[in-house]
Image (cartoon, rainbow, N blue to C red; front, side, top):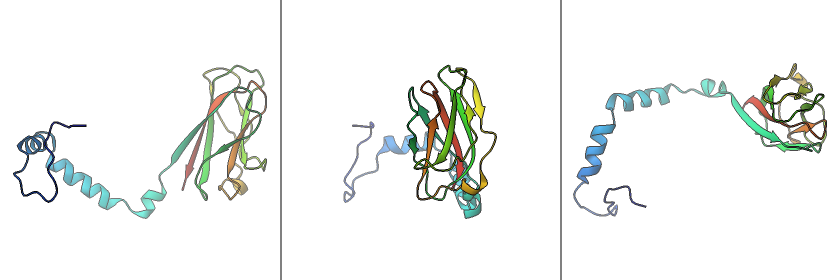
Length: 153
């Protein structure tokens, strides 16, 4: 694939590509580059530890068998919500410890299409992802939604 510039072998002593240099001059602001470097230098382990991640998983029709969720070992779950994609008057989804273990969240209502519901609790004793991982389970065959799990590593 060509980007419009001539690429030269790294060992070449050829002339610089004038088109590439013009592109850099026209599109790169040195103040922006300096700001990005400063921002990178300000990222401390403490600030990185404060970053929250969100993992989304789709629970399709007839997903009463738990669905394994890939979140890093040691991640700490802080919130879970579900966006309902199927109508079921008594629909609920729950996040639990892998292998059918303890529920990490309350049963999240998932009854009306396009409605977003949030867990009412995150169980403190099991909110850290352990060796068994975590999974989401639908409690009925028509419980469908997109589960969003917020966590820190």
